[in-house]
Amino acid sequence: MADGDSTASRRRDLAFALGIVAVAAVTIWEARKQPRAPFDPVGAAAVPIATAAIMIALAAVLLLRLWLNRPTRGAAQSLFTASEAIDDSYAVRPAMSWLAILATACYVAAMPAMGFMAATVAYLGALGWGLSDRSLRATAIVGAIALVGGVGLTLGFRALLIDLP
Image (tube, rainbow, N blue to C red; front, side, top):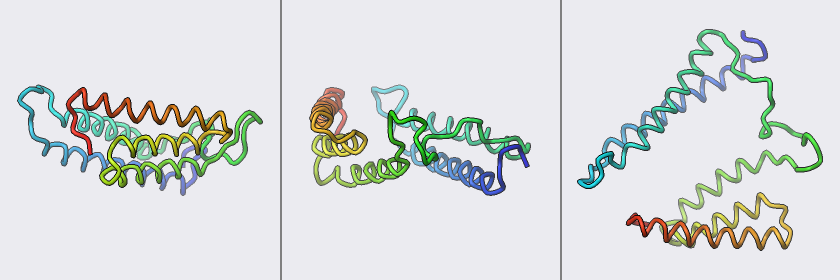
């Protein structure tokens, strides 16, 4: 076994890499079904396919390190897995990463009912408020950023003729 790696951590790395390969393969498969636009030489599928290919390549590096019995853990500890703050200047809240994923899923689910602009303003506001110190000043700043972000993204996408829910 490689230095610093436990059997459990290597199993998690293997499951993670195989999961990334599976999700990326499905992404490539589904992106290939996108119709070609007559005015776009690259096509709508280019970015998802390229991103999925990069993810497969990175997962392949991880799988190769596992196969060669090389360590997959770095010396630095992730802030998301730490239970204490390094100093008192900020609070480490590992649960916020899970709440951000849940908020993103709710944002996508609410978009058809609320519309893009309202859902985006609500998402940016809720996520920003959750990540802030929740003071009155921070809440006002987050609200302004959410409003400008939601309206700005909507206007930007419409200017690019992108159909929104």
